[in-house]
Each structure stands twice: as structure tokens, then as C-alpha cells.
Image (cartoon, one colour):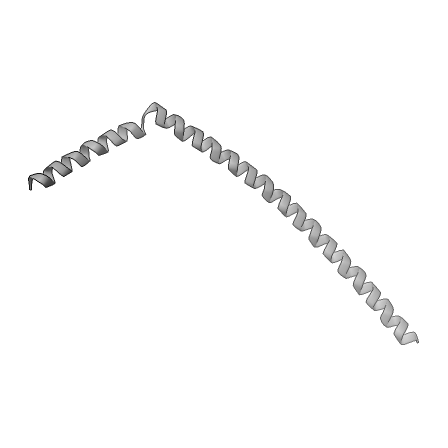
Length: 84
């Protein structure tokens, strides 16, 4: 029974100390720097996503143009076959 009381008291003391440590000025500095780094990463990822979207749009438009050109050639070939 005494062991349980000692463990509970030790846990409460450790928990209280942990809260003080986590809310200290130095800890807040670390949180701020980590948050700033996360924001920089987010910005970099968003820039890359924008570039990727632009590239995909370009590829899509070029693919449509290729298919339209191919359809024209196929239609012309079909007309030539019918005339011959």
C-alpha cells in the first residue's frame, strides 16, 4: 500500500515538474522555432504543389493538341481513302 502511495506522489510531483518545464520560457522558444520551421516547410510544399499543377496543366493541354492533330490526320486519311 505504501508503495502505491509513494508511486502516486512521485508521479504527481514528476507531472507538476513536467508541466513547469513544458511551460517554461525556453520551452516556448523551442515551440516557436519548431512552428516557424513547420510553416517554412508548408510554404515550400505549397510552392512545389503549384509548380506540379502548372506542369500537369501544360501536359494535359499538349496531350489534347496531339490528339486533335491525330484526329485531323485520321479524318483526312479517311477522306483520301474514300476519294480513291
